[in-house]
Length: 199
Image (tube, rainbow, N blue to C red; front, side, top):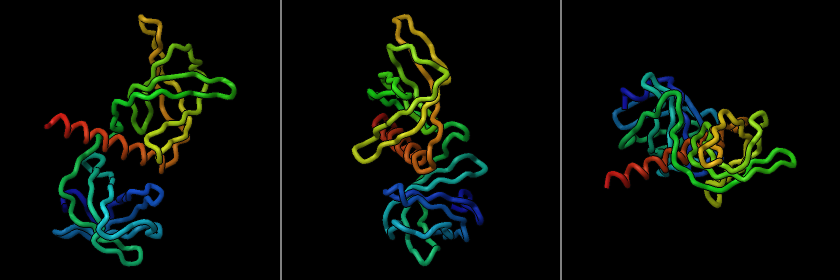
């Protein structure tokens, strides 16, 4: 763990309930794991429960799963992860995501079909000619409990031979919790797909 996590490194901890996402600074690293001092009161963090961890390192964006071994005031002790993964430095994990949804701007409503999704944006297809100058409201349903509401800004529109449009766009005004929710959702789906492919 010493080659991945160092003293004073900033780490984000994401429990099952995203609302209790926290961050902190690493105090010390041992053979068994590391201790970190949290920035916020550790609400919703439970000893022995698996959490997701993210941190910027010299090698890129580090992601791993582990559990809290101990919790005292604002200091948590984290067990060594079994495995870890480096995310691409400037690009969020992109997954195939096929859902019907709507882009809205005032009274204007466009029906779209998503093709892929990341924490940075999504690619969609539609029969409708959409104004690239407008920013649209979109509601992304990840599950019954997880719904992301944000703004969607078109970057590129291409007309296909069949008359349909393929649109690439990015999310704007996305809260940190919603961005972390999308990062975690896409990471988990990507890992599930990799595991299925490996079987």
